[in-house]
Image (cartoon, rainbow, N blue to C red; front, side, top):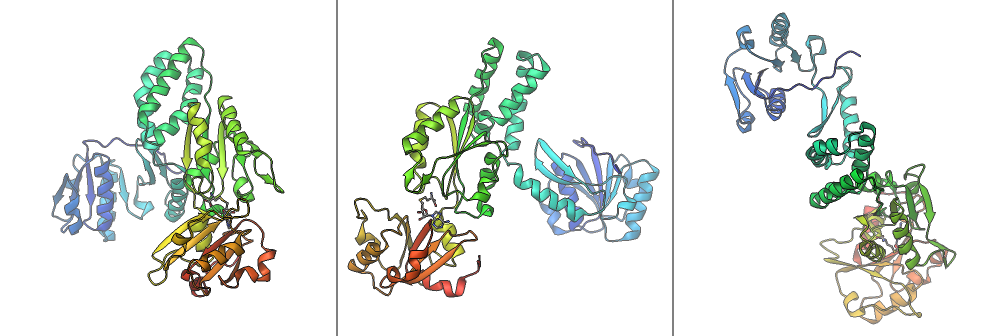
Length: 459
Ligand code: SAH
């Protein structure tokens, strides 16, 4: 280990910054954020310093006397000689010194930080590769939710009373793990601290009476159209937390692989036309697993609330007072059209866009054809392949020109993506259509013609 990592309390303490440029400004801002009294020594200040409250400026060149009473000093001038003098003088007085970008002259270094105050993660390569530490920080930035600030503050509020009620340290650790990994933490992260508080207090009470049993929860998560890179941070976090995963055909294999290795995976989709589980069965299963105390992930293709019956699944949970949350995903219309090079709206071609389901019921489609067959509108049809012929015919019948461009996209955003293009007149006669594999999305409207220019994804 080249350096000792410590977190220093600089509140109300004098800290010196030598230099008046952009780098000095960044360092000064950091010190101010940590509550330091900052003095800047520099003949001239960058005008941007004006926005920084509570600093003192000495418009002079550096003299060793400026170090008097300083807890630490940062040299950030563009003059090597001055930086070196600051370093030497500070070291003579045993004042910790940092010379920006010059590890040899530093007695301490300023790490790259991930700030979820009061939680603070510091990264350092000991000056070897600041870019590498910044990249590492970027990675962690995506993994640690912003809400960890709130979560830490929330925990602090109850730290003492938990200590009083749960005396055994091992039990207390388990108690906190349950709080921080369970529904209480999720409530805090989603902004509902009031419910979180009620739940924590009730858990504490049960802990004292010895009747504590873990409570389950359900995450209804949109997994997007197929490409794992289109998952949200929140989706990924909950996927790695869940004990049981319920998934169906629309969830791509690479995405399923991103759930916790040891999680139980239950397939609840269609097998060759048979429902393995009817919707009712899925709703009940979610309730049963949650009541067993499990963290249950219901992973759905696209967005759970767009043609996903997500609403029905959580209705049942609400009835049983089971904690749940819903994570939106990129819906097929948005993800698939983008990967097919088709913008859903465009100044010249479409001012509105409409999503419909083309699901056939008793061999017909119950749609508002008048509304669909409007000019300058993009129509996106989910589950429409079987009714393609009827769909095109009806739209023409209700006034759309037969020459209106239309496309079918198979397994959009995945390595199996295929696009078949045509017009309302001829698309259903295209022999390629019969070779397409589910899921497929139909996009109709002038925007489809832009595909020639805008294609960027080549699976
Ligand atoms: N909740 C999902 C839609 C479920 S309905 C969402 O928001 O995307 C299922 C239909 O979605 C499929 O029949 C198909 O029309 C469409 N779909 C979903 N993923 C798709 C994909 N990768 N490529 C093409 N169509 C897709």
